[in-house]
Amino acid sequence: MNLIFDIGNSSTKIALFDGLEKVKSLRTKHVHCDELQKIISPLEKNIERAIVSTVRDTPDFIIDLATLNIPYVHILSFKSKLPFINEYQTPETLGPDRIAAVAGAYLHFPGKKILIIDAGSAITYDFLSGKSYKGGNISPGISMRFKALNKFTRKLPLASTTEKFHSPGRNTIEAITAGVINGIVYEINEYIRTFKKKHAGIKVVLTGGDSGFLKERLNHKVTYLPEIVIDGLNFILEYNAK
Image (tube, rainbow, N blue to C red; front, side, top):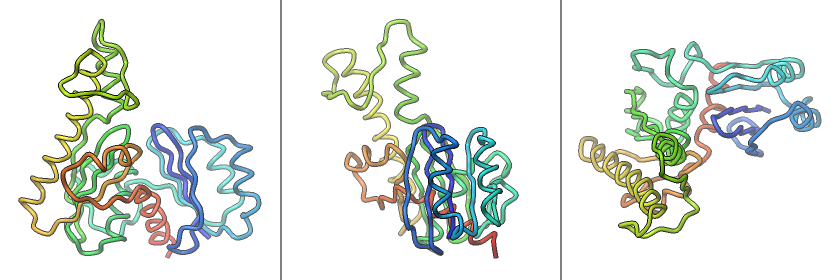
């Protein structure tokens, strides 16, 4: 069995795989030592491998608990062996979440041209062509844009996706909500249109914490894979444990 830790900016995902088959997964805002022990203890005799991916500092207790109970633990980094060719000029600066998403896309659609759109704290656009990762772009995510308008102006209130809105906005909250949401939708639509124009037959994958909110608002058909990062981490773990 494989244990997967995906520590993101806003939440932590934990999953259990039997080979390449996902057995269970959960998402939590905060992981505590006791909570993690409850997850691992009943399964520790069956867990042979684990992988830890983090975009922030890794809590020491996660590494301690994993290495204490699990024979093989892999910390994802730019030095990890990858199932695809990484053409990023500064691989040491490439986020592990982006590495895992590309690996997940390659696992699900080997040999294809794929645009991976990960709508989380930031929105990333990563391009995989066959077996080669060509690079990608990063822009602010939904929550980050709302917070930026609130923080860097004197009078604009903090809005959110929970607000109903018309466009054009009829009040300031509507104006902010419509501006942020429509701006992101227009941005994603144009990325998809541009990539489809340049790369015939390209597959578009949508993932990330805000992907469920955005997928019905797009003008283009996308493949919705909310756990592609988890799938990619397990794939990388299997690849490095060989």
